[in-house]
Length: 104
Image 1 (cartoon, rainbow, N blue to C red):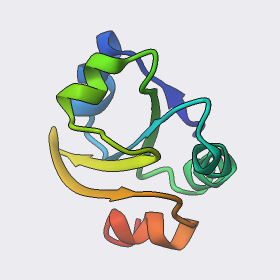
Image 2: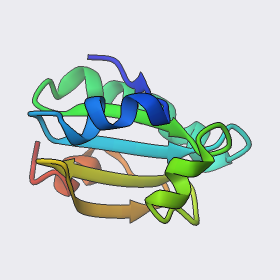
Image 3: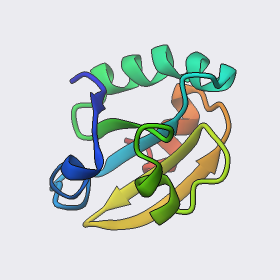
């Protein structure tokens, strides 16, 4: 599965109501580490069908960034059952992403 770009309007349906764990990548187009994360997240999403991976551009979706207290990017947040269960800031490799979700 590919990384899904989501907006504020889609967030509840794609993330909070998801039956699968969701890894949300809060990012910005000007952020170097965010650019480095894109291929890692794409590969992770392709290899882990049990996890949904979505991306939120904080400049375009500043209300979501504020609502979820995103102050640095990349900010990776795991949601399970509509609740935040893990959060990491900064570049992470595939193994670290899997560990955030309990081994995926």
